[in-house]
Amino acid sequence: MKIGLVTAEYAPMQGGVGDFTREVGRALAVLGHEVYVVTNIKSRHSLAKARQVRETSNIKSEEDGVHVERVIGGWGWKCWGALSDIVRRLELDVVNIQYQAAAYGMHPAINLLPVARRVDSLTRSGWPRSLPIVVTFHDLRVPYLFPKAGPLRWQVILAQARYADAVIVTNREDEENLKSQISNQQSAIFRIPIGSNIAPCVPQGYDRDEWRARWGVEPHETLVGYFGFLHPLKGGEALIRALAKLAAEGRVVRLLHIGGRTGSSDPNTNAAYAGRVESLARELGVADRIVATGFLPPDQVTAGLLATDVCALPYVEGASLRHGTFMAALAHGRAIVTTQSLVALDELRDGENVLLVPPNDTGALADGIRRVMADSALCARLERGAAELAQQFTWDRIAVRTAEVYQQALCQS
Image 1 (spheres, rainbow, N blue to C red):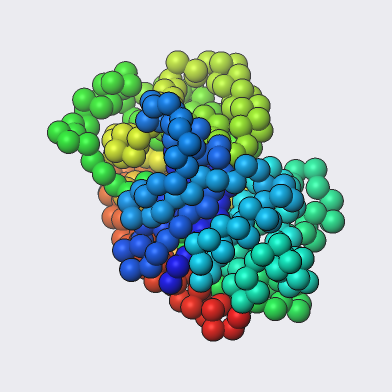
Image 2 (image 1 turned 90 degrees about the horizontal axis):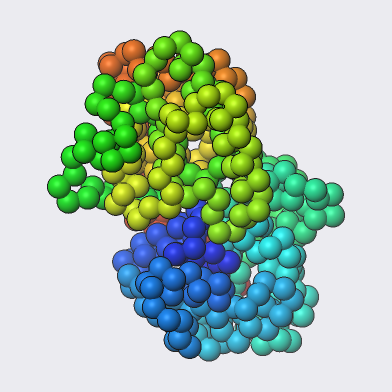
């Protein structure tokens, strides 16, 4: 198949959707499909900066077997015509929109693209009538999608799901949400989990103590790891309060914040929250116990994760298989303390592959970290369990299932 992956975020832009698109595109290419990533010009600026070269007019490239077209100037209404031109030129068999609201600047044009195709508005602009549209929803939590949105904007999301030829969700919560909201669903809903956005890749000559020393961490100190941007739903404030609680008990503990501070798609929201977290750390007297690595290349993320003794991911709404950072911690076999999901997840077994604590409970979070610090057998069991669970979410499996969805959409178009 000739597959078009439409995304508003792509490497080297910082963000989980871009990482996902890169990995699934690579895996689909390995299966023998011809994969095109269609993304925005902003990713071209990021690419030039990352490579430290002057930006040129060459906006098409091949990266790890995937064709990348950094051609979309914006995601307003004009993107319909731009996308129509691209799919005709490339003669694509299927288009898969990777959807996460902030990446598209909250504009409804991409949401209504499947609707426009059904009512011929899109075909009049050149979209091939038989070309199926698949939508992958990366996060359907309304407060995250639209912090100040009313019901109308949620209806725009539902319209996108109703009029797509197929819908992919990454987790059970979103699957149940969609099924409960849409009674006359025209397209099938498929649940395909994401994989780790960072494949374990140990730097050559890796020495754990040496890497810890780079961050000022002594061998006898307990290093708690946190991976990902600081975002209001990821529990940064609870983690700081738990760190302060452990420090007040006289425990020799530090926190390693691995990765970038804000990300590319929603930097203003993330920056404001990051400022609150950092202010809280100073207020509680633990700022000197925190080391922030900043954005790192994949092998150094691996180095950081492997340097930690316990990984704390206190998501406000509970652990979910939608989080690439959680999947990365699993893939690296970390002893993970995280929060109980709002929807029961059979994959997560408390005390076996994760240690679960209630959301927004600083005392319970501190107690969970303390338990792992004190019990080497528990720590080892969690590490083994995490690595075993990660094998269910490899990119080759994800690509096979995704291609099956495309094939079904093609048969029905």
